[in-house]
Length: 291
Ligand SMILES: NC(=O)C1=CN([C@@H]2O[C@H](COP(=O)(O)OP(=O)(O)OC[C@H]3O[C@@H](n4cnc5c(N)ncnc54)[C@H](OP(=O)(O)O)[C@@H]3O)[C@@H](O)[C@H]2O)C=CC1
Ligand SMILES: Nc1nc(=O)c2c([nH]1)NC[C@@H]1CN(c3ccc(C(=O)N[C@@H](CCC(=O)O)C(=O)O)cc3)C=[N+]21
Image 1 (cartoon, protein in one colour):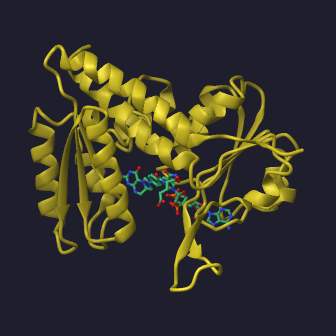
Image 2: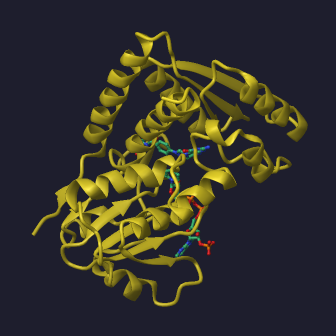
């Protein structure tokens, strides 16, 4: 049996089209949602993401504000920019690209962002809202991942879900979303004993680790839904000149023979992250205006 390959790229395009349609409706009322993305330093991968985010923001009919700061930027300077964006009425969403250079306290920056503009959903106010079931801004990657799960397994109530990874960005909010849908949730991490055995219980398995192809085919329960959040660049032996390829945290070729459905890398969760960022910006723009 071969798994259904969940087409995140197509799903994300559909979501972006729905956001764009809603944005057109706001434009008729003179409203243009705006997203500010802040990049500190010159990490090449981050530059690619920020460029993609800006292009898709404009494509959806929203305003894009890019702020590129040198790696030498101080915490005080970055805080000052966040305060300016908080006060700027044209800005509905603020995203400060992570990781930040050493010397900047990321948590302090996150806490400085106005919660109603926190389209990453990383501010403790939004984290608390998610944990208590109140409406708020939900982190884009887990939100996108949960939409992909819904597309193949709309009712996860009572199912065993295992999330590998406990970061504030992916693992923890992913577990919250699954819990909200009444899955029986286990969060695994680097100290988990017998990880393979824990994974074998999972009807829903989410890997958010950052270790190329760590999850093997024989860790997967037959028929399970496997969501691969990992984005890992590895050397590509097929190519000369040091080219790399992108792989997830799951050994895809093995896993697809066992799973019921699986997200690929690239083309799975990644494109959903950006589409959900646009959806969150739209949500923030409406909420800020009481719509
Ligand atoms: N597709 C997308 O849009 C996005 C993709 N990503 C990707 O997702 C992956 C995870 O990102 P992120 O959550 O930020 O990463 P972090 O490094 O913050 O967290 C990784 C987690 O994996 C756990 N872990 C590490 N090694 C093992 C192991 N051997 N066995 C079990 N657990 C382990 C860590 O455990 P411990 O807590 O004990 O250290 C930690 O909880 C990365 O590949 C990242 O690039 C991230 C964001 C968005
Ligand atoms: N404040 C903040 N918020 C984030 O959401 C955030 C961040 N910082 N820092 C970095 C991570 C990573 N991230 C991705 C977004 C899109 C793809 C994506 O579109 N991936 C494509 C491939 C891209 C490629 O080819 O490199 C795919 O999987 O198909 C991947 C990863 C958001 N992150």
